[in-house]
Length: 178
Length: 147
Length: 149
Image: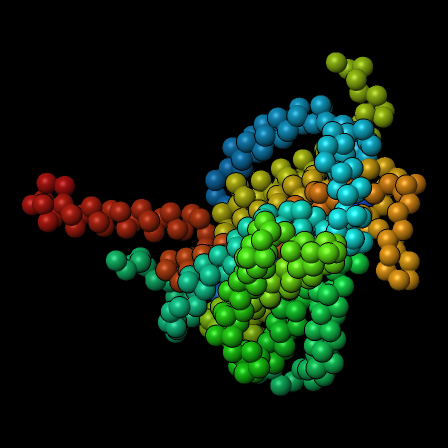
């Protein structure tokens, strides 16, 4: 279903439908996260992907345009690029451990340590929260700083000027002012 | 323009309080169940964004003026970093929450995680709402009938 | 080479291949489509498929969500029988999702500005306008230099 939704995004020209499909895509991926035991991630993806980013994309559409123009160049080059990259990635997966393998390297390095120690050291039932806020506190501080910076960037870009455009969709052809 | 969506307006009034309550639950119950600052911030922001979409931007900005939101963005980061600095001054490592309860380190961890998650939540709320304000404050090029 | 491809191997790697297909779909949208909003949506698909790759690495068969069970007093009961999935990818991806939406909105803000300056959000249209601008600049520059341009 995820693949079908993604392919529909490729084919659809109406941007409104594309935005809705991306919301559907987010919800489906949240379901997939739940089946892979990542309830926290699924929660976030459902709230962020289906909620906030759909609203933001719609806001952008209201400020720009609703339809995509047909592309004129041939899709051969992109398809070739995509196929080559995909083949390289496919070759890379041949060395990966099987899905859900308890002996996989990722499940044997720091993970047993976190599970065993967080009971005594943190005493918080949700291990994800314990790692997020305590063991990897620096990491999360950095992420919060990134979110903050992105917010400041958006404000600088589109909320400083109160310039209103009157002429509807009339294009401004002379380019940016110096 | 928006005055004919009666059902939407009534349902929104009912929902906004519930959403905020749910956000607070997710925020402070994040230790025990899925959730935490990031999710709670997003859900809290959704409450205000919903209000802003159904009613008008001016209405929601009367409740939560843009300058407050902009301060919230920075305040969250400050709470987070301040928690670290506080543990610094108590003689521990940066962001070592054992500092808040030296006899019982895991209690200190609880306090520290709570404070840090609160900082995260405040920042995420502030950023999401202010991004929404920034987008919504622009005059749309497409009017409502075109949809 | 071919004897590796047992049934178990194929089923065990099906998840990676699914994510590769999704990732390539996203990449195709980014590369081939001219519309900037659609590029952002493609980027989102790409991003989410990377998230799914990470989460699938953390999954352990028979494992459960990494939340300890507690009794009524809130004390953790540690049951060695229970296998928990790896929480580390969850943490990384959790923060990455929120950061992702923040950066996405930064991209959308850029698109809005581009729309205001150029009047279009199609890559082709923007390139045409840029080319015209360069020509115009060269012409003006040439005139200023005494017609040698």
